[in-house]
Length: 244
Length: 117
Image (cartoon, rainbow over all chains, first blue to last red; front, side, top):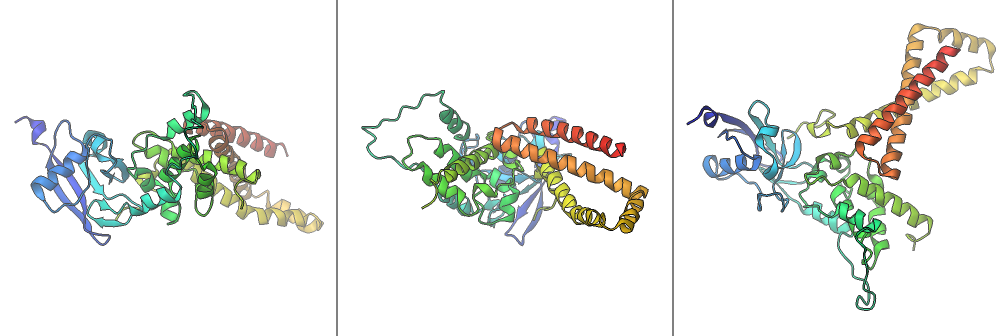
């Protein structure tokens, strides 16, 4: 066995609920190893009771996000060599979400806000007669495109300061989704999206810290999406389209 | 469970630093404003105003004036950064560079003005 293979990682893992504590594990270091590999090693070889979440392991499903050395990350695409400090890892659940146990949070508020921001498509009437033509180079198509690839991992939601200050803030992911939907000209009630995101703690609650854009694993920029919603709601309200 | 506060690892990026500088400089300016109005109000009472001017020659007061000028410059630049991001959709790096340049320019200009009197 080579010297590299005998090295170990010191891994601190959050155990229990909010009143829990970190527990230390020693995990064999590999040359190529993701943070999710480390968590899986612990669960399969050291403590089968460890609760964590994953599915696809390749950065598509968005279920394995955790706090790694203080920063929210998608663990399946995060190489240990990039984030470990002196062979040490500190793994905690995502912040700003209710903790269930160990590394698993309850994502319910995250998805409820997705709905509250009208993050779903509303069909128009008579699609047969009014088939929308959307040229790929059109600005709205480009704006929707820039925001569409969200994997719902909750990293931005966990990194957002405003979410940590205000329980009712819709958060970067839901608002980013709303911006993508707003730019879909086929949607039958685009003003409904603006109403949903501009009432209560919606887009105007954002403080433009840009933590969401900083941490998004797929390099989306929710801050700019939210800025787009701010401009769109301002214009619509000046025209009186948001009142009734 | 995790360290909250300004040093949280997830906050170690320019957007957060810029937002904090903007907010704290705004706070400093807000605290200064009553003093500013007080001194303006004293201008109607010659003796008190002369006394105030004499007091403001104190090196410590001069130093804090320089801090205020800096606060004004960075707060102005912070506002421009927000406008750049929210109205013109500039990238983070662009907005930070533009704001830094404005802060430097405005700060230098205001300091020059201060020296002129």
